[in-house]
View (tube, rainbow, N blue to C red):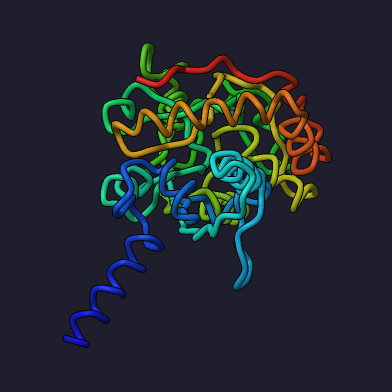
Length: 281
């Protein structure tokens, strides 16, 4: 009997602390009543989400997630468990309950909407392109025709270069070079295994800031992307609560402060107003 009681207690702890809602009806309730949440973020993107040691990751998305969680908890402290959420795994992590929410440069797209409830968006980013500073042959996005561009696993950014409308933008005959994530894209770019990396400017800016003598942005955006908080499909009440938190984050100046904190030295024209809400389904 004692063993059964201990097993039951262990299961209760896991329900409160592990990914997934457990005994709570929504993620918002888990945060408010349980005081715990599991958040998926990038761990390899400087300025956005980067983990370099045993502590929590750091970056714009991590600070946004902290603000949202604290708002949902009514200002109370919440234990956040951070999980890595690479582009290729974000939907699976939500669907199998490994994480409660994803804040990981997660753009709203029509192909993702049937599988993910998106809250927000919380910021507008623009797809731009990063090249080696010594490569003078690429000055604008149209120069990518015939060039080698990175295909990061799980990302749709490359489609805006190589596909025609409505799913793409430019329909350029570029050569796709696969990579596990954008950090590998950058390594391959510096090693001259490819010629360009194209994705949201906020994601690229951190890499340029780390190595400005070797990398540069074209500053030639081709699309507007809305970064949102990913939730398991059907989490409508939590979506609405996060929308309220995002509205407050912009109204009280926190969003502008965080953008300046993480991207103020990159030379980007940073957003000064919140993106229009997408609306919870």
